[in-house]
Image 1 (cartoon, rainbow, N blue to C red):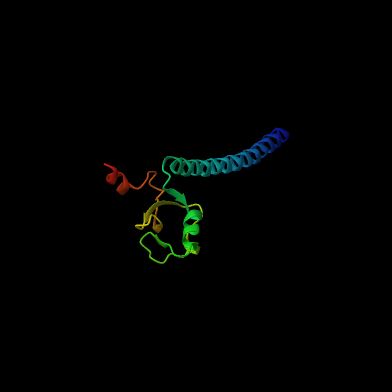
Image 2: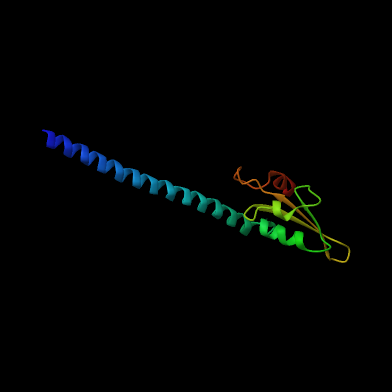
Length: 124
């Protein structure tokens, strides 16, 4: 009887340790899947609207001399505050000679799962 109980306890502990290891791996796979889904959404948004850019593009425009760059209504943006992976809606303005004069960026809120509602109203 003691041997049977010892076997049952041993098997239960072994199965519990195996289940714990498998559940940890499943959790990690789910996290990777969620990150992949977010990145897929970003790429899809950038493909459908060529005025949707990443933070790297914003940083490149900030570094250009003689160009007025505005990020979310901040007239003097700091490139260190721009997240590389964030998405921004870009609006360009040209002077009378056709030279790029001003670039405005507005961050896209990815937590809502859709693009900027104000821009959709403008298109109507």
